[in-house]
Amino acid sequence: MTAAEYRPGQLVVAASVGGTKVACAAVDSAGTVIAAREPSRAPRSDDALHDLLVTEIEAVAAAVGRDRVWGVGVSFPECVAPPAAFAANGPPPPETPHPIVARVQRDVRDRLGSDTAVAVLHDAAAAVLGEVGAGGTLPGASDATFIVWGTGVASGVVRDGSLYWTDDIVQTMVAEVGALIVRQSDGTYRHDASPDWPRLTAPEQTLDRRMSGPWLAQRAQELGLVDNAESSVDDPPLARVNAAARAGEDAARRFIADAGHEFGSALSTFIAYWRCERGEAFADRIVIGSGVARIGDGLTGRRDALLTEELRRGVTGGLAAFGIAAYDADGVVVSALGHEREFLAFTPPW
Image 1 (cartoon, rainbow, N blue to C red):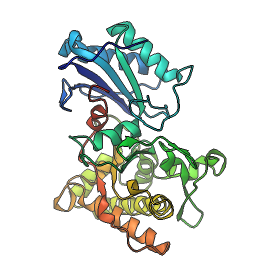
Image 2: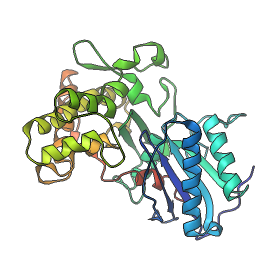
Image 3: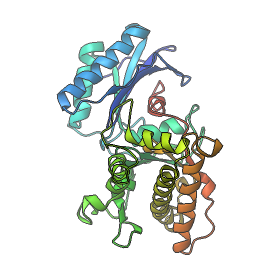
């Protein structure tokens, strides 16, 4: 199905589907986010999630005027192959679209019209595109990595100005950081650069599980920092840890520092492989974002200062264990953006 030709002044309705919430807004060709909706808690049922998603998209379209909407972009925490417009080295379009892509396309076009352009991206892929755009943390960067540190851990990579999707060795770049970095029995981490990663280790030992938001929330409960690990859009447990740290509680500050240091140590294995073994510049500029990365807000006088400091110490220490001393850890930063980074990936036209 062919989408209508883009006309100057038209907008894209962009939606971000995360592990806990769904957010939606419109974005124009200058990368300005407008008509943003308050995030809604993501339902557990797939049917309910898709119903909420298309309802939010339709509400934003109505707010800006349906005649102004050229397309719809949706980011999902699902390893969906990107359209050719987003990844120069992506796989050819499949004869049968991924089920999520097919459903989003059908639902959106049923509501907004059969010629509506529709694109679906993995959330980490959308995030890195947004972060190197005009409104991102690294505007104009041609090589960069974004690490999703939230309900899960994943990565998106821009290489030579384009989304880097397919790699000859690890095959799929998006999501590899969460799946390929594995915690060992001695507490250190390793990077498994292999397409056989699903069979290499128990899932609970991957970075995706070991440093995920739910795992850290459970750990915070066990340490008595929060009364329960239940999360909501307005009251996630790690935000309570952050509030306690702001109030001067040493245990909360240590929790944030320890989490940052361990995550940085794990990330050093990614850097050692991609920068030092493969010579890839995208490992020099790393942005970390999403829900867990916000636990450093406002500490040490600057936003995220405590978390950033510990992330960099973990990276430096981890690389030193590999005998690598030349890496500039100042290239590791915490994003200043929220879910709007994923909206910016869909700045029209594609």
